[in-house]
Length: 145
Length: 415
Image (cartoon, rainbow over all chains, first blue to last red):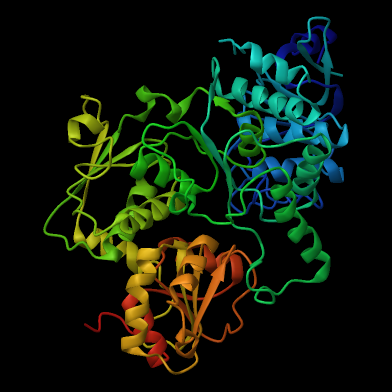
């Protein structure tokens, strides 16, 4: 891909929780519920009905359209962030209250900021190196590195 | 769409009322923006589903709020915990888990929450009133408050229920607003249907399975004997689905007529429910056939009301189960205290009765014998217990449960 094409994939987004992160994209075709779907001890995806079963979210930039499922997802995400098994950042198409609560609680308790961004996710594929940054207006900048 | 905060909200957010309130407001604001609320509204009460120990983060959160001088601003009840604090020794847990699980329950009390430890706060003196804005966790309590009482709450959960209690505020969105309480999908019961306890469970299972995120309206439901039958319906619907509000035409307060329930509009879909549909749904709750050996009976999910006790106790005396099969009954501690004051439980241990308070037999390790099926009259318990505690289940009404305890094996429809 040319430098110009790569830059065309850069985009701005809105933070549900602001922060900086870098990592390898893990793009999920289906929304993943952390409760019942992710083992907070390891970051493993354990939902047997999910196509990404057997994958691992730790230190990845998790990309999916939306959140899903029980409010207990907030607790599992906060616990995963505490344990260091959470994604480095999460990018969503639509804001999600449950993931936002988990991320903000973890920041409040442990001073760990796992950025949560809402933006267009088209064109991002698993394995892309993604950087999430903050511009001077507080907006999210998502770029391929 | 922008979230507008009033002066009080701003003051809380900026830390003028202490760090705990500031943290709670910050979380509440992010949540409110995510759901698209334009403002916050005052709540009259909260019910916190935060006392079951799921990991360090949940305990750390409550401890930090205590350190930050946190205190709830509205009357706040607590859902079940992992322990029966009234009956020490009933729950078996490794000491490494026991200490934080006990601390989690106690820490909530230090925030000023009430020691109700019940999934049925609507049975306590903190029961909300028609039209009152509240922020409740626990799926059966949410659906009961919205549907049977006509109070107004969304499905709140982890952390956010406590943030509402700490600030006395909730996002003005969803079921807090009248327009969003309109029934959307109509379930019509057809044929002549007896108002048995199981009927209400079966209707709840079907409504939960088929409503999706739409608000169900049920027509043709027979008048319930009491609100416990509606409790069972709602609990089942919130088990098989995400139902937070149902309207039962001619029964629940916002559905005096079908037209009122639908806000004068046509339903988006109509589904007919027959007796056979209900029987099929109920049959799926049982994983063992009639005649299977019985290890225990579990009643009271959601927590047994005083009325239910008044039906159970004469039944126990009449049937007099004598095989030592334990009959666990989950109930709120306030109900238990009332029964003890009335002397109602005297001698009942001889029939195998084991009252359980503050917790529930399917969320923690209470059951001693797992060498047979457990029989229950609860659709919710029958659904969750096999996954949670690894038991096989037989569903039946209360009298079948007691007769089965007397016989030592599953019997149904003996009358």
